[in-house]
Length: 154
Image: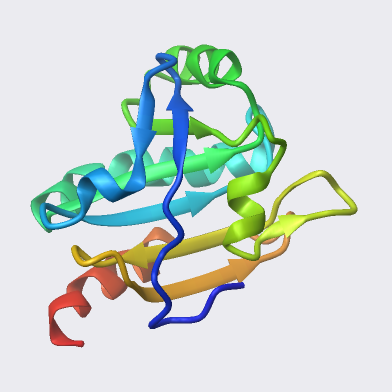
């Protein structure tokens, strides 16, 4: 996993609407919470995404753009978002398979998907906070909000 203080690797991925999203386009304007998760339509991932959806207003108020990433296709993301009535942006690290997760050091080679890596990237493009959990370990969005609250103190 990439360490705090490391420049965040840039990438361009397609979102659920098949629109290209480039990480560096947020530099200078907003911080980014980058949330890798294993797979759509799974229990632990669904619980995390539901909690994240409820927290989106707090992240937006703090000037933080939330981007979620998995190896699923944009089409899977679109169906999942529509089914759950979520509004977050889901990015497809579909092809080359898991390349962005790998660049952040959270790709689980033996399973073929990302571990639960979370990175808070400041407006300058530097990783300011990070955590990584295994596929079955759930994360807590309140920890992410606490990291956001400390973003300007670092």
